[in-house]
Length: 540
Image (cartoon, rainbow, N blue to C red; front, side, top):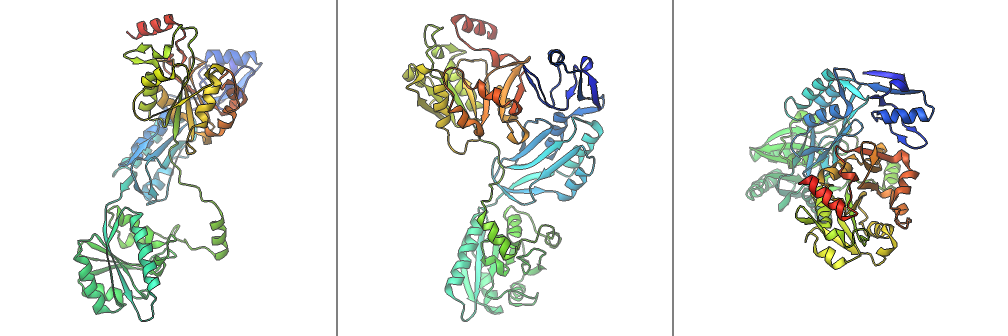
């Protein structure tokens, strides 16, 4: 890849290295300069720009990120579309994320141009949660580097998978000693049930017996009669040796002690055993507490069908110090812990309240390819996976709403629709749920805008990368629909008239990302009968 400062006269096709704010435009980092951009630079008296050009053996940052992400993604994982050299991987299932840590290290050691970050192995994840990200550092990377990284990511199976929880049937045995309080046993049982249920399992039997080898041996046999997949034992006294009461009882019941102890604190005294194929966990003392400990690290693996081997436990040292000094723990409790990263929830607001004065009748009820214009816009939003889809009606609201799909669409009526588009936009924004991260504002009179355009706009959204407002562009012209991050909702509520939200784009050029479209559908709206005839003729 070639990189450096070049004369503006020679800059067409250059990948711009740094954003430039011109009097009439904002040229963002990563933009491939066009002839029109070069003229704008000259008009702004800029003589040199810094950027990059790909050579024959280079792969562009987006293509490289997607190739590696596709190789990484296994079962339960999907890759987003790449933007600015980044491709994110999201969970499609609930379960735990499995990472081949050794291969991940080898991949990140291939070349500084490729960086892959993941959640810790065996973290619990939910659908749409971010589990990994691939970032290409420069604007392009040698194809040989991409090939090596892709091979490491896929050889021996995909490097990142999400293993779904199995519906484990679990038995819990609690041993007792004279003087032990019933509330302690009840608390231990409640905490353990919650732990198992959090992994989609079920405690189907709870048994109690004296903390004696013979009594526990017999109780283990009774527990196995419940057709269980996992046996948990909470001893009244912590196990301190392989020959202690709990492991001795397991051995007499025909079991094998696989491992005792673990480099995770709290959790050091966990014991792992089995009888035949049935795994058995002798809980460490910290298992009575709901706070994270080494027991959780083992249960997560067992809950998704992973056989836990002694070497697996012995490698848990990095990150295994879970215990904190009392002062630090107190500080943590005072802080609000952020929720796990997830895929952004992007809503759609379909503006369908106008009077269509230039049309002579309500154009939104005209049909295009068998659907009314408003129904077509709404179906596109649904097909793109936007949600919720909010349709703001006003003029002839009954007729407009009757033409909409019967499910998965919310409607809200604007009694002040005559005041202009802004009143409908304010109403739609105010009606969105609190957990919506962004909204795509759609005009219902653009029948050529389809789900693929909306998916491209939604996928571009990433406020952490400076893409908080996403605007479709065709051949340098901006169009609609436009996506706004939640951070702009208050500003949208303050606009008025028919200006829409154009002022917000002008006020925040550094946060506007232009999403390049292959066709001019994002520029083509219906204002007159001739417009609709022209679009229909072109489509036919």
